Image (spheres, rainbow, N blue to C red):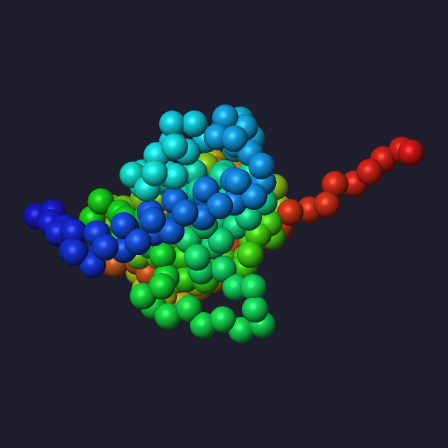
Length: 207
């Protein structure tokens, strides 16, 4: 029998908090960059309609959408959700972490802490229940992810391969191409993940 998922009031409140924070920060960063909604849409590949809804606080954008908008503005996703650190030490309490994905069976992806953009280093905690899948369209060239599986077994899928990662094992992967995290087992899957997406300087050639 399939598990029935009830959305708690805490989850709804967290979604509303994240939406309000992203709404305010997107408007602030866009205006600081001097970009109109049309210009940001062209630069990021995110539709103008979606950007309008995000700024109004009525959208629940995907992680991929936030990544594209952040890259276009020269900031990080952590900047968007307010867990970026710009001081020598910053402690982010559990209630301030931002859950940016909710799975159909109760899974979640929570951004715990990260750096200010444009260079991004982020720490995430993931939970996937049996049968849940999260698909990513891929990140900017050179992006690296480091994962450690705490419980369950992770199936990490790339275009032409699948890798089984049991509890206690760790992974280093380049994730610039399309990939997916899957729980194909019968147990709850939990893993932590660090993402390093560094903007490489362009190399000048000629005079």
